[in-house]
Amino acid sequence: MTDVRKIVADIKQGNIKPIYFLMGEEPYYIDKISEFIEKSILTEEEKGFNQMVLYGRDVSIDDIVSNAKRFPMMAERQVIIVKEAQELARSIENLVPYVENPQVTTVLVMCYKYKTLDKRKKLAKIVGKTGVLFHSKKLYENQVGEWIRKVLLGKKYQIEPKATQMLVEFLGNDLSRINNELEKLMIVAAEDKLITPQLIEANIGISKDFNNFELRKAVGERQIVKANQIINYFAQNPKSNPLVMTISLLNSFFTQLLQYHGLKDKSKGSVAKALRVNPYFVGDYITAGRNYPMRKVSQVIGFLRDADLKSKGVGAANLSQGDILKELLFKIMH
Image 1: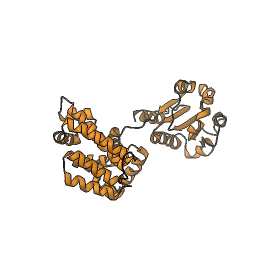
Image 2: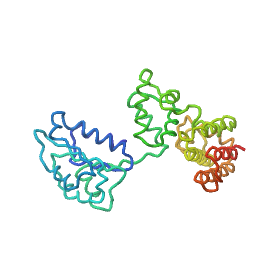
Image 3: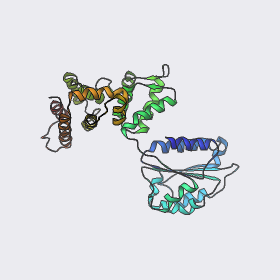
Image 4: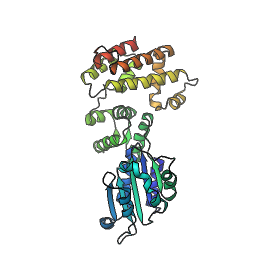
């Protein structure tokens, strides 16, 4: 995110490079940077003759270079944006001669999604010298909550910790999808600027009471009745609550609980830092730590691995997802 801010700040200050090679597994930032360039460098009057959007599946490297070498018409620069540039992966090294000596009046933007340049080859070594080489990396799920908070804070909104957790568990680390949902939530929360679990339930369809976050909490607190209510809801709504997701999140929780037991310093700040969780949730681990000693935690991780295999049809004996989850819950909590 820091690199994105620097690219945007440099462009705003007039420090514009002739090449922006945007690559990586996370398309969100690639889209955001290319959209900013598309909207910001040329005036509306200049765009008609001097801004061009090409698609990797429709053009060759020679086509791109040919367009990039022409001069702008009645403008200081021209902008060429190549979307889906990863379609040119087999011939991308043919861009080297142009990158070595780019047209200074052209801003060439290569949107190379889901792939990265081979760092052993020449293009990766030289593109950053004449332009900008930006690597958009996927966030880990434990980083997404903070990303959500910062995005909302930048727009003067706040979000409750439980609401953040609901979004992360439901949407994972797909930043484009999360951003789309945040845009909707900000519209309905425009008055008090606060996003709550109730708001998410009403507008996105994630239940504030029957979700993986609440299941994890109920399991940690050994609330057997509540945990069973949640898994019964999951069994009735398997498409919205896939078993593989539930097992994965429970496995993450108990793996963190194993780490918690190994900590010498179990102060709130130390636990939050070691487990990479919001301090708001540290109490959940302290409670679960009392309910599940280290030996039991190790056993539970084994149960989760067995359930994961059964969910993939190994030794499941035609058990439904609901039955696998009920069996798993019984083993964990007894």
